[in-house]
Image (cartoon, rainbow, N blue to C red; front, side, top):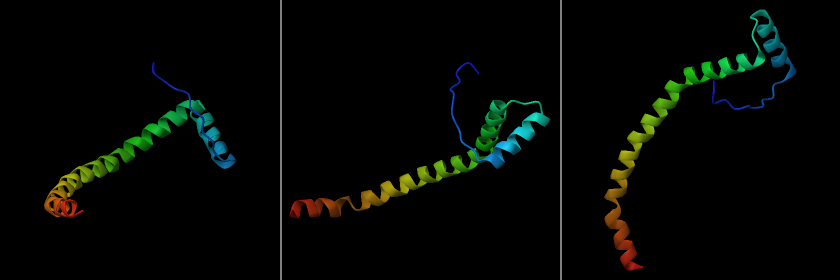
Length: 81
């Protein structure tokens, strides 16, 4: 963890208590708990993010094709103006 940065988070008292209980029972610091929670969240949500990225890439090609189809119309309008 040579390239770490400090962050600040706010949690309500209930979450703080639950985190403290968990950390105490697992001999874990709150910092480690938060790091693991973030890693877990990203690992579980990465497939969704990747799927969105693929969808945007596919739509990008479709959007380019649609725009290309209307190039002539836009050029005609520009000529009229």
